[in-house]
Amino acid sequence: MNLPLNIDFTGKVVVVTGAGGILCGTMAKAFAQAGAKVAALDLNEESVKKLSDECKAQGWICEGYKANVLDQAELTQVHAKVVQDLGTCDILVNGAGGNNPKATTDNEYQHEAVEGQKTFFDLDPSGVDFVFKLNFQGTLLPTQVFAKDMVDKKAGCILNVSSMNAYIPLTKIPAYSGAKAAVSNFTQWLATHFAGTGIRCNAIAPGFLVSNQNRSLLFNEDGTPTARSKKILNGTPTGRFVDSEELLGGVFFLCDEKAASAITGVVLPIDAGFSAYSGV
Image (cartoon, rainbow, N blue to C red; front, side, top):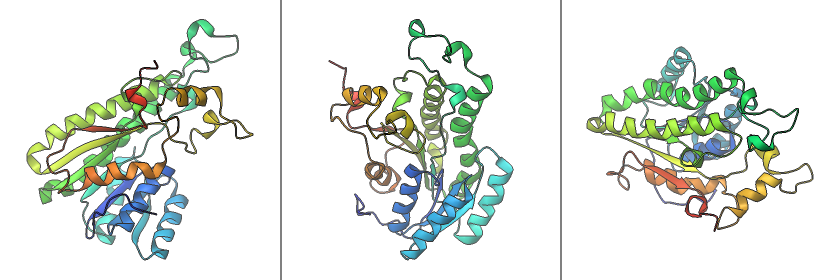
């Protein structure tokens, strides 16, 4: 791919969680292309092994590891493998996250609810709990495991993945919006907590991207945009979705120890203008 910035990450060990998905898989490839030694982590072992093979075919360094970001013991075991294979962690990208149908309403507004729809009052507590765990604890636990390497080095970078939902919640997805708001808050907390160690912590807040998780919500089976998709595009000044590769400029900038040496505790929107538009 055409990298947006000419930043050399040669020698850096970059750990990317959620690398089996489109967004973080693209980030993992980009870091590998830029010279880093990449550890791609995901619950879907097949996806990260395929990613690893694709990178190695290009002559890049990338190893895939099956990892559950909600299992600290498993993460500790994976950490040991990463250290053995690649070295200690310099950059951690906490990309694992997502939503769950059990934590999503069918209707946007309660007064428009019709019989048979799942409303706010029907949200499954287990689904809400899963979403908060996956997004918040799925950021906290890998940081506990891999940031120890950075403390020992007195240098490093943590990059979390928040969302535009963290600023203004979207209808239908209260748990996901709340969980990503927690990720943004945690980013600031980590930046303060690690301020004296040489570790910087920032986050990106992607706008609307088309991924495997939301494709069916944004497009009908015939490829035409859904009503929700039209609302999103009407609320975005540029009138388009964000491409996964468009995140890379912000990712590379925030992770570069020279370019962003004084930047920590920042959540960077990458949203094609969505947050700037009032709707009028």
